[in-house]
Amino acid sequence: MDKSGLIKDKKDDLSVEAEGLRLWGFQTWLGIGLTLVFFGILFFEVDWAQTWEGIREADKGLVLLAALCHYATYPVRGRRWRYTLTRLHVGARRGQFGLFVFFYNFVDNLIPGKLGDLYAAHLIKVNLGVRRSAALGSIVFLRMIDAWFILGLALLSSFALFHEAMPESVFWALIIGVVIAVGATLAMLTSVLLHKALPHWVPLTMREHLKSFQSGIWPQRDRLPGIALLTIIIWALEFCWMLFLGLSFGVEFTFVQLLFLSTIPLLASAFPLTPSGAGVVDLTIYGCLKAISVAHPVALSMTVLNRFIDYWLHIALGILTWAMRRKLGLRTWRAAPGIGSEGSGLDSSLGDSPSTGRVLP
Image (tube, rainbow, N blue to C red):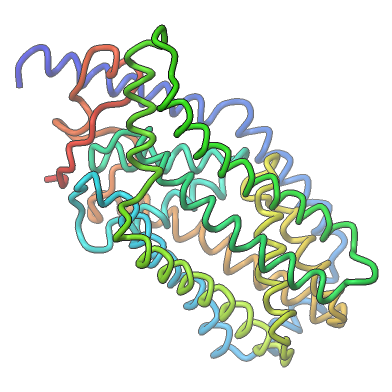
């Protein structure tokens, strides 16, 4: 590699290090602190002897089946994400996108403000050379699809169950869902409008970023049926995860209750002050179970087990994945030589570069 190439690589590494410092700045430690406070308060409010007894009596086979359904969504989500980037001709190993989805969700469980989505775009950049703006565009598209899907089911199930008096926590969860769905949709529409009527004085670099963002936000038409099918599979697995978890405690949910329990807590996970809405999601799950008349001891045990599998186990597996990242061929911060180091000097200083579509060596 020539001297100029080395300089660009160093610039790219410096931009990555700067992003890492921003990612793990004051807001992250504040979010972790708030999470610990949440769980500290909850810890002293829970009858752990009774809760553990309920978990111990749960059907372990059904609990395992529930966990498998939940974690099976990650490779499917990875496949769907790859479909959205087909027009960029991104080269990746089989299952690599599933690994990306699993890992950036692990990071999202540690940092507040939904910064995990920004990290997801960075993860694609350093591993496959795809521009962050293009990757972020694809994430916005998928967020919009999921947001409207979840919001629609949450509204239907909530009004079916509480057509007379809706609990306040459910109402605010629905408001969060509306904000996310509308926000993602506006981001897509704005990118189109700006592309068609962008003032001439806008810098060339910004134009390139917008064009890159649009290349990721609009998948190829022939991929839309596949994306729709994969979306249905993802949420069918999520519904099965809640179904089997309930059955493991001897609770049989109706179809409407299942939709309600699978969607409202997900809307609450968008709470920005704690990582993945930690603490808020726990209270929401428990509140939803109580709202459909699940007995207190069972609701508490089910909530604790749900969050252990979905949140704490994911963190543990994420740490293990990070420890094995070299064997897995996963780059978590810095790009490989030749990946993410192309482009103009200004592009490099921004930490972004054109997509190369190459597989890591």
